[in-house]
Amino acid sequence: MKQTLVEKIFSNKVGRAVYANDIIFSPVDLAMGTDATIPLAIEKFNEFGLDNVVNPEKIVLVNDHFAPAKDIATAKFALKMKEFARKQNIKNFFEIGRSGICHVLLPEKGFIKPYDIIVGADSHTCTYGGLGAFSTGVGSTDLACVWATGKLWFKVPETTKIILSGKLPEGVYAKDLVLYLIGQLGINGANYDMLEFDGELIQNLDISSRLTLCNMVVEMGAKAGIVNADNVTEKYLREKNIKTEYVHMKSDDGAGYKKIIEIDVSKIEPVIACPYSPGNIKAAKELVNLKIDQVVIGSCTNGRIEDFRIAHKYLKNNEVHHDVKLIIIPGSQEVLKQMEEENILIDFIKSGALISPPTCGPCMGGHMGVLANNEIGLFTTNRNFFGRNGDPSAQVYLCNPAIAAYSAIKGRIQIPDF
Image (cartoon, rainbow, N blue to C red; front, side, top):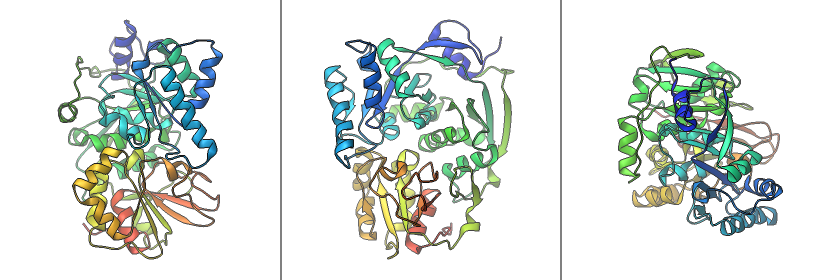
């Protein structure tokens, strides 16, 4: 019986043929947690009455959500995770100063490999599908189960295949593409699906863009998203000195897809998600001249060096508008280092931007830039739910890095000339 890519990935792990909607118990290659989710997972693990995790080398712990800690409570979260890592001999613990936002950090550190099964106690763990892995977010209790057994139960998802043809127009980025897809499918349009991306565009999309694309599939309700490993993936792995061996897989011709969606991306224009949903999509041109109070460029969606190179084109030799707060959040220490080496960092500072340490911070309304009453934010993050980013009366709009940077200069939403 013919299989989709995700069915083959799980079949390879469990040692028998499995298909969509099968309930299985599968080995897990990597389990990730953060300071925001690990404390509860530790409590659950302790309830099991076990002394040691089974595979400490397959666990990654990242201090990123409240990094650096904003108060006593979040400092205790970070300390609890650090002490757990020490007790369990978990070497892959990343403290501030040597860390980053988890979904930027793990790919650049070589933890993500094609066809691995990865879980993380963070909903945007689906990001790693950009490197050909099956990766999905889980709750803290499920994470504790992986620590205890090295395995987790899964319902093999059905696959929706999205074929993207054509070339993105100038000034349209992966962020626009995924926002457009959310607008088309709806926030519940792919519930529990695996979204398999294919087509002419995907073959020419760099890894940073693939990670951005897969990062937001959860905003459509998807279990995971995936771009199959190819020459672009291999080049990325070589450049990062990531050594991995795997047998290439692909969906069979005639595999049982839930549905197939074909989209000509050459017709897509810059878009923005309006309050209070990533699915509330409007053409960016409809929002031109909307006054803004704060701009955030960064996050696990758009916090890689490629994103800051885009923003730099507009901020270089320009000044942030006097009514706007611009917060730049590199996704990792390595990204920050690259920004300095390429003279991007100094130009951002000269423009009047505030450079934050790598952190989830304002994306999840934690700190480092929450909004006050009635403030309007323009963020390159992935969610703009009611009350998520600060005061409930605040409003957040989601956009690509080019629009964010150019609008920070103008003080209002503006679309750059390309």
